[in-house]
Length: 275
Image (cartoon, rainbow, N blue to C red; front, side, top):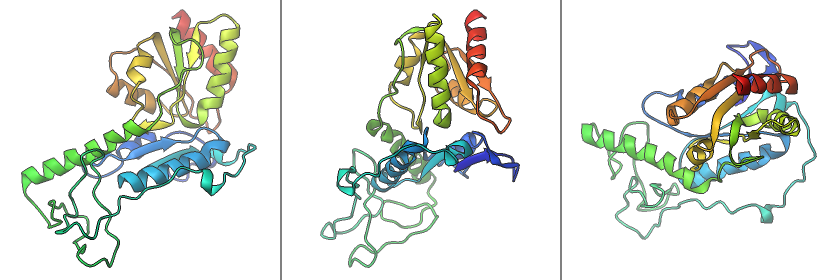
């Protein structure tokens, strides 16, 4: 999803970050998916590769968010050799493990086996209807609830394989300036300038939105205030407030089809610090 000014056709050549909640919740039923955001032209490939690896190995949809500013940006980037990329290991079904249970899941990732089409003995029913462990259609209420919870837990366990949230600057202080995706460069520059001016400000940026890194609560707990800068009306700040309601969040928002300026971010941070 290369986010642009919306809704509808809106501002088709301008940047925005307003599709976050759609990516997180825009489906029928209780069906969470993994959501990742690239933050620079040079890491778009890496996060696209990571999205593909997670999708295949965890058997779950993955949404990769970028934005028009990243899409139209450029940066030196060395094309990696295939041999240097992490291996993608599909959870192929064992044709000798019969009888085949298509919705049986492993204990670690809750991932079901991937049957290669046409393999004798691994035939099973597919489609959008709820299933039992045997792959038969089921309307049993308890089975549906169990499957809904299992699918959500499967997505949550992806957090075991994503990196911790990194903090640039002091690991504790008065203000943590954060955001997600393509705002990273502005946030880092603004925080660096504020630090040089004597303000106790640190910075971080999220690339993994759902699930969130496992150390977020620990990071947030070290700061008095958390400023969330994003090119929408505060979708990520609201999401963080749902996940971690114990912290104080301050929104820095802009919805003009244009990126933040460093001055805008700095002025807002100083206002928050003095408030």
